[in-house]
Image (cartoon, rainbow, N blue to C red; front, side):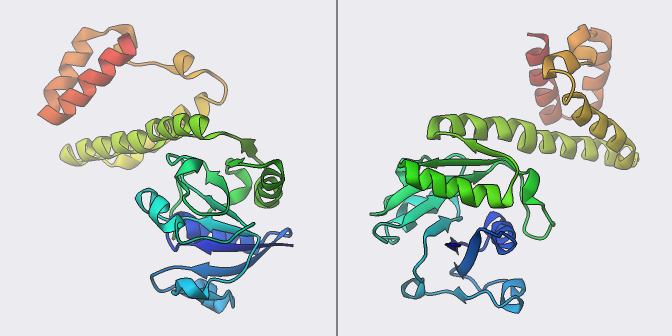
Length: 247
């Protein structure tokens, strides 16, 4: 069994901890967090600590904290001959400043603490300095996911910004659509079949082939009608995206 310790108590740390608890290749030894641990782990008899000097010995330490804190915190993780990894998509492996073996264990998914998630279908992007460490990460990853990829730091940065486009920016557009529906007293629920169909289409078509709408048709009349309904900020976003589609 591979002994694992999770550093953190946020969205990814919480769901990753739950996934590792079900792994037949790993033993979740401990969770470290500055804040009080979730009752879920206490009830499941998972050892937790809020003190750095109480962190136990393990084969793998997974730092799952805010991106800005990774570099500074990792300086405290000086476990010689042990593997320390982080779970960030935008932080390079070199940002780990610990005197240990280093790697990355990045789940490419939007994850919330209180929404149940299955890691089986979440792509796990792994990276390590040595073949042996990569082999260990691969074993851990495959024990909780069916989709494991060997991705280096440069590739992961491009993946992360791509994920922002397909997830964060798309969700913001949902928010704008929801605001418009509220303004004109329409239930946002009516748009959900369209949202689902749009997501389904790109499983069979490329995004370019799937593109429809007034911008791709250069339907100026419809575009102008839409702009009349929008506030200034929404007009800027609508125009920017329409121009990008046309180009």
